[in-house]
Image 1: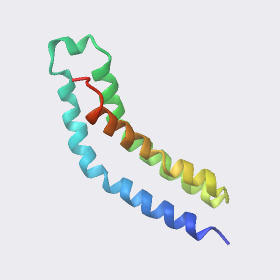
Image 2 (image 1 turned 180 degrees about the vertical axis):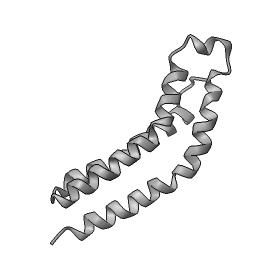
Image 3 (image 1 turned 90 degrees about the vertical axis):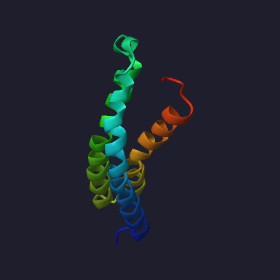
Image 4 (image 1 turned 120 degrees about the vertical axis):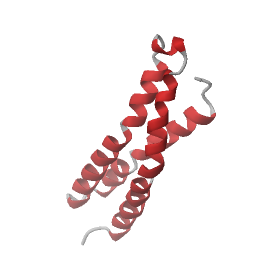
Length: 103
């Protein structure tokens, strides 16, 4: 029997991550404002921020596939670790918005 607790955790967390695609669209489309300053073309931060924000859906898809593949191979701990990869994007986005004075 497979681990029902891991399956429930993966389902709930990934449902939340998929719902976060809606605010991601707004954030991703407004991330191009990082190039608003004339000096921003020279800096690397605006490019890094735009690439970082636009990589979230790719990371989410990879996380979904790998976590469920590991779950079906009965590697439950690895499935949970891979399932929570999108949290890194959320934490980094919160850090950039609230703590980084890049803009």
